[in-house]
Amino acid sequence: MAEFKGDIFELLLFSPCLLPGKTRLEENKTAVEIKPTSEETVLVFSIDDKSNKSCTLREKLFGSADGEKICDGLFFYAKGDRRVLCFVELKDNRKDLGDAVDQVTNTYNTVRQHLRLINKYEVQAFLIGYDGSCPQERKKHQDKLDTCFKSKSSIYDGKPENFAKFLRGEEIPKSHQSRKDKKRAGK
View 1 (tube, rainbow, N blue to C red):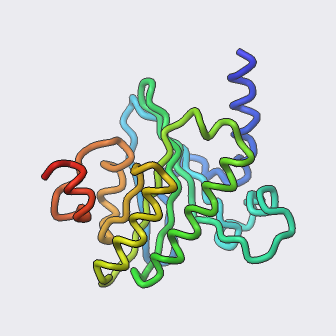
View 2: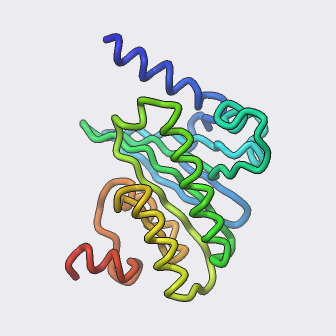
């Protein structure tokens, strides 16, 4: 029971960033959403204080350090024994995906340093960027995410409808996977 109380205490760090009753995260023209079933629990945290002024996570994680990158959101997903923390970055333009990767990895690495809790969950990253991207850039970004998130990360082709499938651990249609994802799946 004491361990559970510790988890609750650590989760309180995110409470000012919680979007009560929401299952959607939006940033400009981009959004991700999951409509939970009765067996699922979903909590959405808008953790970037530039879009959520009431969130104090940046200050708690980085103190007064200037210029530290933080991602847009964090989703907590639970079904049965499965628990997932998914770091999310939403971009209107795919040419910003390099910056998105930096935001997600910096946020994850800093949260991991401060919370024991992070090791008790499956940790993922989901990034969206619209418009074209050259394959070499995509591979470089995917490799950086795979290194940080132990191959549980993904960059998709601006398809927010795949977010719920990704979070649930369902297969994503082949046309929306990167080549590396297809190889990993043996397709």
